[in-house]
Length: 357
Image (cartoon, rainbow, N blue to C red; front, top):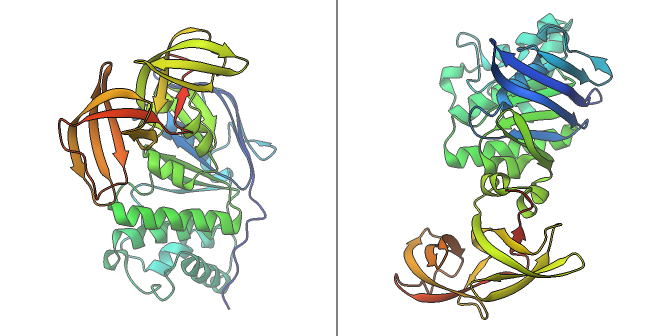
């Protein structure tokens, strides 16, 4: 019977005032504080060059912090090399040995960790079973699909039972359907084993699907930290609103305040929602495409510029007095024609005022 892999060693990760500067003046990460709870999947999300991969590599010990301290559990690992940090990393490129079988690839790290031959084989077989590759042990990497190779890389990292498991853009080489399947596999394994996982991606949907918490990074710093729902429903600024899923940024006027509620005006359409600490005057709304309602009453006026059928929904570009919006509608049986005049309203949980910028 294969060895059961356990996660009793899962540990939290903390950054305290951590910066990374390359050369004299290239600031890749700028004085960030971060707490990754043990047993959570924590995603670093942001555009290229924002500092997310450098942050991950500093946890791994592949880059050393310029200033600040990094802790894994209660241990200060800031100055420790990668080999002494008790973390495993799944690379974007998989990094499998082409001349080794699947089983040999998965067991490779175990022989350097004090396990005997039989125990290494048992653990490697258990790892393959966990990722759905039971019976693939004698194959070579070249005989596997991209998704299967990715699972081998995950199994190889899991069998070491690290305190922290790191993923660097793990799905970027897979097609769309396979990406969804493998991300679900990764999330299921993380939850079943209670692993501490730090996961880097630039894909917003991927981050929303797998994460307990998400760190949105911008220009080497942290823009916002929160659960997927918190970031989606209550972005702290227009950058987060537009980066976490698509958002229409709509100008409005706060015309009245009543406690923590505000009444806004959008081209004559009045709507009440939480004020989020804003005062009366010009403001900006973030509204998801699915939370705009076409042919609503009341609403503001618009005109359909483009209509696209994508199978499960219609996608519309709608022009209003202040600019264009992207709207999605599940009614595919009664599509709106181009140049149709519409009245647009907000769903009950539709818009949110943007506190900053």
